[in-house]
Image (cartoon, rainbow, N blue to C red; front, top):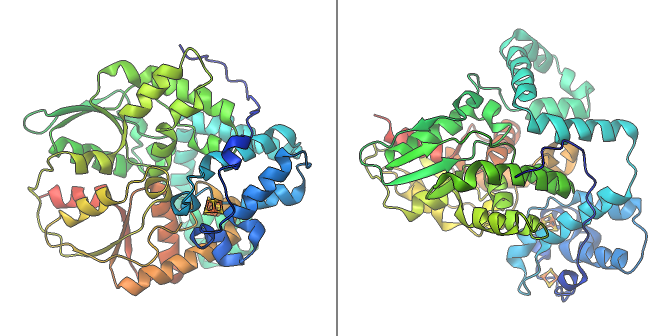
Length: 431
Ligand code: SF4
Ligand code: SF4
C-alpha cells in the first residue's frame, strides 16, 4: 500500500541518452513549437533544447541559460506530434526538469512557496476548501471589482497577472461529492469511476457535476471514489517526480480494485499523467504492474463517450462552435477525433475548425502564471485564429485551457463563450 509519508522528496531522474539519440536534428518540429514561433530562436525550439540536454548529458554544467530555455518550454508536446523520428520530447523535458530540480539550489522563499503549493496545497482538500472560501469571498465582494476597475492589477506586476487568471471559486465545492455514487439513468450499461481532480473540486465544481450528469445520461453508474487526490501532473511538470509517484500510488490504491469499466477524467492535462503512471512507477517493484493496469483503464471522458453508443436524445443547440485541441489530449494522448465527434453529434450545432487548433494556447498548467509574458504572446496568436472562425463558442477539453481562453476572450476576443465539450453535451441533454 502507498507510503503515507509527506516528506518532500527530491527527484533524481534525468534524460536518458537513448531517448536523446532518437533526435536526428531534422528540424521538422520547429514550426510546431509555440516558443520558437514567437521568438525564432533555435535554443527555444525542441531541437535546440535537445541539443542543450545532450550537452548537459556530456558533462556541461546546469547553468542559468540552460534552466531558462528548459523552463520556457510549455511541455505542450506539439513537437512530439510533429516529429517523424518518434522522439518522446515530453518525457525528455520532464526528466530535464527533474534533473534541474535535483541539482539547483533555489532561493529560500521559492523553495518555501514550492513546498507549500506542491507538498501541501494541491494535496489537502482542507487547505483548498479554506482558500477556495477566501477566494469566493474576494470574488463575490466589491473588492475584486474595485481592484480591477481602478487598475491596481497593473501595479501588482506578476501578482496582478495571477489575479486576472485566477478561476472563479464555485461553491458548493465538489469535495462534498467524493465518496458518492450516482446511478445510471435508465438501464446501467457501465460502471465508471470519476477522478475529480484537486483544484477542480473548488474551481470547476460545476464542470464535474456536468460530467457526472452526461455520464448518467449515457447509462453509466458514476462512482467518485473515496481516497483519490491530486494526480501529480503539476508535480511531474515541475520536475518533482518522486512527489508525483507518492500521489500515483495513493490513486492506484483508491481506484484500481473498484471493478470499474473505466476510470475517467475531464481534464486532459491530468489524463495525460494518469495514463503515464505505468512509466512513472516502472522502477517500483510493488506498484509497476498495478500502475500499468491503472493506466490501461484510464480514459479521457470525451474518449470514453465517443467510444460508446452515445445517447442521441438531445435538444438542438443553434450555436457556431470552434474547438481548441488541448495539448495533453491531442499530443499527449493522441485524441483529436473524439471531442469533434461529440460536438458534431449535437443537433443544430455548426462546427468550424480553426487554423492551428493544435498549437498550445499558452495555458500549460501554471505556465501562464510563471511565464506570463510568453503565455500572453501565444494567447494573442491563438485568439487571432479563433476570431477568424466567427464562432460564438470555443470548446476545449481541459479546465486550464478554458481559463486561458476566457482570459484570451477578455483581451482579444469578440465575446465568445468558452466551455468544456462536456458542458455543451450537458446543455443539449437538459430539457
Ligand atoms: S525532435 Fe524530431 S523533428 Fe525535432 S529535430 Fe529532432 S528528430 Fe527532428
Ligand atoms: S513541448 Fe511545446 S514548447 Fe516545448 S519544445 Fe515542444 S513544442 Fe516547443
